Structure formats: C-alpha cells, structure tokens
Length: 258
Image (cartoon, rainbow, N blue to C red; front, side, top):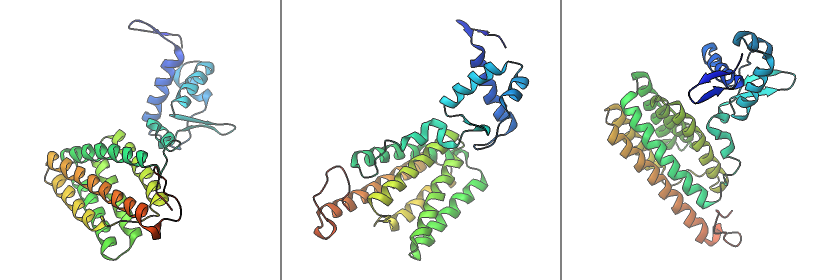
C-alpha cells in the first residue's frame, strides 16, 4: 500500500491501514478481548506489507484500541482503553474531597444527558430493564440487603445509559460509577447512607419521566438524584469529621477520616 492522496497532502500508508484495521474489527464483529488476525493475515486482507501493518498496530496500541501480547498475537483492547477510561483510575484519589466533588459534577452531566436521550430513544425492552433494576434496588432497601440495593442501583444507571443508544456515554457512565464505588468503599466503607430511601423514589421519578417520553423531566429528575446523593455524602463526611467516636486521629482536610 502506498501513501494515499487527501485534501491538503498525502496520508501515510500506516495511517490508512490503521483506519482499515478498525473497519475490519467492526466488520468482523470483534469485541473487546477477542483475538484479531495476525499481522501477516492483516497485510494480506488489506493488500499491504507487514511493515505497514506493524506501524498501524503501533498507532492503534498507543490509542488503546489494539493490544499486542508477545507470543500470543493481537487482541481488541478492553473497554477500559476507550476514551482513556482505565487511565482515570491512575490519578483519582477516592478519599480526596476535591476529586470526589469533581466526579459528582461529571456524573451529573452524564446522568442528565443519558436520561434525556433515554426518554427519546428507549425501546420497550430497555424500559423494562430500567423498571426491573429499580425494583431490585427497592427490594434491597426494603429487606435491608445492601448488596441487593447496590446491584439494583448499578443496573438501573447502566440500563439508562444503554437506552441512550450512545456508546460513549455508556462507557463514561460505567467508568464514573466504578470510580464512585471506590470512593464509597474506601472513603465511606460501603455505607449506603441516609439517602437510600429517597433514592428509591428518585429512581421511580426518573423511570416515569423516561417512560412518558419527557426528556426535560427525565434530565431534571436525574440531576436531582445526583444532587441529593452528593448532599448525603456531604452529611456523612461532616459526621465523620466532627464526631469524636468516628475520629481516630487528626482530621485530614482533603480526605475522609478512618
């Protein structure tokens, strides 16, 4: 494969090959973790040299789209590589209040938009998934099963992201919730908090707005849910900071004690 003309100049062959590899992954229906054709096979399918393919693979590896394992071959990169999501965890500090508050701001924007889009795009099956997840969360709260509550809560927000039909939002929502789970487990020791009862009702409000096909109401309900969850975090933080029984040592202004 030679360089290809483009507006304003020529495209290097490896750049074109990189695009074609991504197109091939999509055409073959390969999923994250799936093994890809070898460099020789790719060269044959793309009609180019192995050298060009090798350079294309280097680019895709740097972008987090392809993973090369020595002695094993090429694989479609895990979802964590998309949007650099897996790298977020390298600098996120679960007990740093500034980081936690920024994460809530990020989640608020995500949840508003996924709920807004879900109200426009959700299929009947996706609506059922949202409703069933909300029911699991409610059952977990009513029976005092925190594990069930958390399972339903995660499924609820994931189902709404799925119903948005936007894969970038789906990935971002999953990563943000993973980071929030870290702050909950490390900073709050997994406490559901006093907001759990209200959260169940807020889930229902979001679901009803999505079901009614009302994007504005869905976004408003989602924003209220995240804001109230943040308020609960703040109250718990204040309790841990100022309750002598909860404070084993000097308070740290940037993190949760204990």
